[in-house]
Image (tube, rainbow, N blue to C red):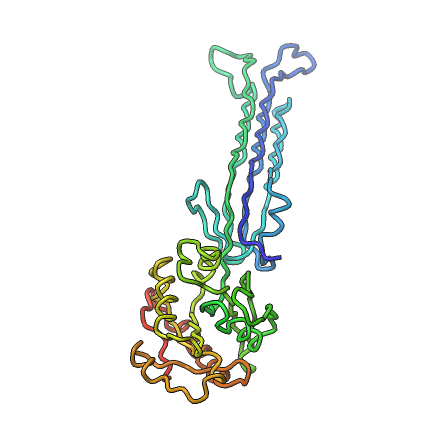
Length: 339
């Protein structure tokens, strides 16, 4: 089951208390203070791990508490610090507190302390002064931090498929990779994002994400739009799929680009290809007017017959290589389909 939202409670370990103790040695009946300090409580650390792909586990275990420290002892022995608790999450997880993002974990091993352990209290040996040689003062350990956090997963992929429901996204990713999403001839067949590893010849691989269908009003949350749109944010290259059998191609494309813009204007700065899908159902159609209207060429594909798929894979690979070798902080140009 793919889960991309979770709310968790985290608590740092409590610090140990300081100790009140005095030396008791032979021939020294009234020795000085030797009470040790308490140890520091353990921290709760959230760490990104590539072997995870969902936040499902957090639905069943929402509470995380680091180990408490031990108290100080006599003979100036300090308490042992509590062990940190490492909580692993998938790459691409955002951590929010009170609705504000406090960290974005996108790289393997990247981590953040989300709840610090309490400081240990001082023992009476720390309270000696010139006027107080036998203090009985001590400090209790501090409580660890306690927070409620929201985890939000945004899939990390090289290529994201964007289109209205039933535009052919699931069929395309199933042809390109080993991903096997549910495919049927009705809207909203795909209710969760799917990731597929696409092998390019014997050279390498790239990751493709099948984003569930976007509808008009998605940026307001209509049709689970917000649940879907956020997964596009971490995609390097967007494939905009438009069904060639649509009654109004321009309007369909306008809706898709409009929803991306309303959700996050920066998404329109990503390199993108415009694909006309199911071209086997439109064998005699002339799409010159559509290309002229949008000001760029389109690639015509059919996942059923394989038309254009090899060319598309070449174009994706070449564009990803260009982006890797020549990264641009703000790449506003759309990938040129003319090669």
